[in-house]
Image (cartoon, rainbow, N blue to C red):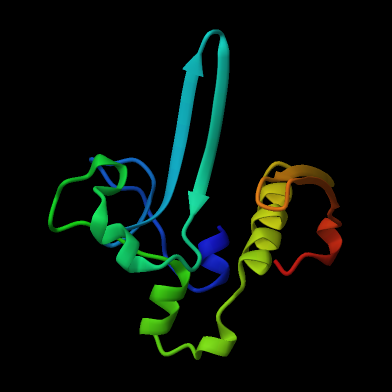
Length: 130
């Protein structure tokens, strides 16, 4: 749903996890269980340095016909100017809005590990972008 707001069509891949745009992976999910504790999360590539993925095998997918992409990479290919590309903060707000709408929450608590702070986000669905 977040990708849809940027005009990007994401889908599932029959053989791999995550969200794909054609043969390019744009989002990953993770789940871990250890010592009776579970952890989960996801990542959505907004504007990483795409060359960094050349040095690793992303998500263990060693298929030369598959690659990794990002919101910025896709939008740039479609002619979006660099000053019109969304920031990580803008994408985060869209993620929260879509999460709140999908699960009918009005308040979402999230932890920003980069800024080492927790935030409370109140969302009014009546003011949604739809």
